[in-house]
Image (cartoon, rainbow over all chains, first blue to last red; front, side):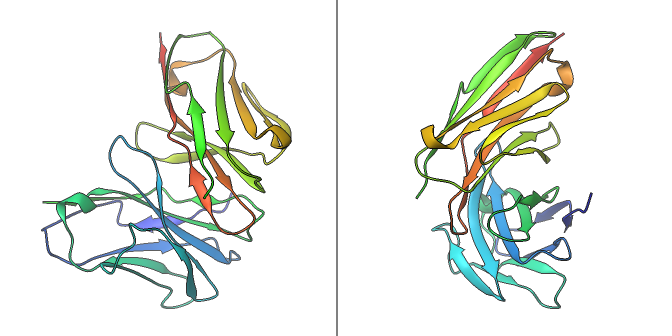
Length: 113
Length: 108
């Protein structure tokens, strides 16, 4: 079965540093998503991306966050100046269209110290 | 936006027992998926089931879209079934919202 792949699997960063989390969605998919999950809590929507632009974002996705599809295959999430409360598992997801299965990557665990 | 509720929040079973997990949602959906989050944090896609019934081995799911609920059945539970089960639903736009999850513990 095709997979969404994410790198790194785990990153530890100092507070205030910039972090880029990378995702390779499934090749024929058109809709891309980032979610996060703080340890022990629910999975929260961050942002959706379609046709090279953000289509929806949550209140969590503030000016510290940005997304990009730099080369037609990768989909990145950047956190400009990390805070302790950004420590979480970040999931990338993709799907062909809005009526189909969403496939999730294995997640990138970010620890901010 | 769509609200998603799951019950029960926690469930403890003996190995071999059966269980039913429930997901209620507040609006019409065109996507509903059940996930199992394993101890390593991975979200394992169990079912894509916006309506109807599906079965996969010991697991089955039923969604009654007109009544805005879905059920996940686990039969003959095993210790490896332990983890958190999430229901997530999508409306006719791009929203895809997770419920709070049911934490299942299967004891040997």
